[in-house]
Image (tube, rainbow, N blue to C red; front, side, top):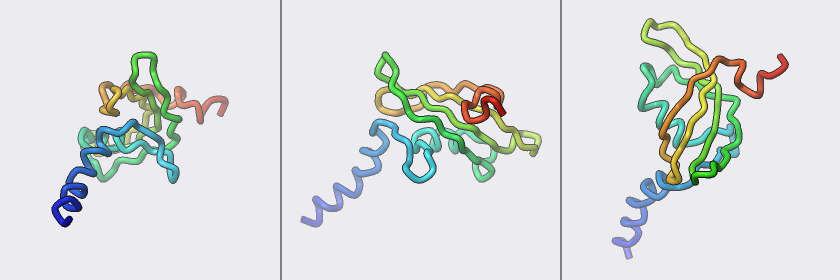
Length: 110
């Protein structure tokens, strides 16, 4: 019995990594995107994301989601932009497109 429980505990992170992306009920974030950003940021501790869009399915079986990203750049200054992420059917981020903040639907008309 202990072996089965141990196996389940060890496999849980793998299952969540392959899960379809969804918005967090607390802050709207998407785990797969946050992991991607932390892995690719110059200074992961400076990373702040907000104004998340809803995750939507694409015709090809993938997913799209957007958010505002603010983080330190190579020069130590802060950079802010709106990012759109394309994920495959397993929720792995395939591409990230950077846009100026006017692309964020939350900022439209402001």
